[in-house]
Length: 517
Image (cartoon, rainbow, N blue to C red; front, side, top):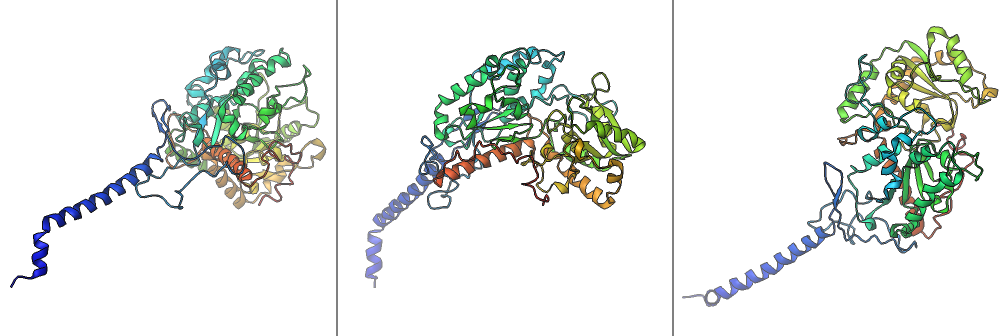
């Protein structure tokens, strides 16, 4: 006998199959649509690998900072509204790292490079050759096998702004949508502009480009988001050169950093001032590796060096500075005879601009003395690190108060500190002091110095590191963290101007460093 239930189902089977198929299609369509809409909100920047140009940066991420209030300045999103990623959403690794680059009028950068022959008026130095190879300068021949082929260039220490800009063009998280940017980069070549007018020009001429820049920036919609506190620029000279405190014609430099708009921006330069919105990043050295393997090979080479000198000094005396300790250092170096190697950098003597000469001495030395010169800092700090030579500092403003994103806070791990700020405090014998250093500590210090090498070089702009972060990467990370901390203040209802651009009279003392731990 036929089952009545089975019979009924079979009689209506076509309609039943059609109903099941219709429900399945609705479910499938809903799933696909949610995936598509999720992906639409996560489009990322695509770069032309040959030129580093931004091709597309569409986004629907909610980053409207047109008004600076704790309600409108929100943290950059990392998840969806529920706190997790939707199905089908591609993780955007650039969230929180996007940088928008202002397209400045050419007079603020390109024209300065094109007029390179005018950059050093009053001197006999031609800057044009140093602008080759994206600011690295001409490649160095290596007849004595002191350096490493294809990685060393004749780099001018004052071209940081050009080098940084060219590396920024290859930054993986560029965007042409400023609403999603975590930071705004201002590619003004402030140092090159100053080089045009260092001698024989009045303050009106010296300040002209700076005044024009802040006027241009303040009229842009990006400025009103945080009134410039998400903006940063990079300078190839010391920050003090941009802090002329009066309009007396005899005073040095420009007043860029004292302009009201500029106070709201951060500046990265080879030496910071004592103001809180200035940050130091390493001087450009002459080593610009294109692969991680080149760094590893160089580090191994520095570990194997035969160091026949206890200490060395590359520099010249500063008799014009009454309290300069350089003369005392040179005297003690000469008195130490075979224990010390002096590289005399007085004009007309040894060519200290040639890295072969400098690296030859530093690679043969256990300690490299780093006293202040015309200012607190010097490129020699980073040359000594490249050579695996332990730096000896005499003032906290030479490194410890400067390169906070690149050098360890525990300064005793990689350097020797002899607290001698001026001649009145000189009570040491360098030879005896350094000879007393235990061998095991010397080995530990040297290894830490060699480990620092990747962090203080600006790698080739034409390639990207596979695993290591260079000086540029750490500078970008540092400024992004700085700007995010300002956003946090705003979201908490605090005034972001408090402390942002204040002067810190204690910045160059040891009060903030304690015992270095």
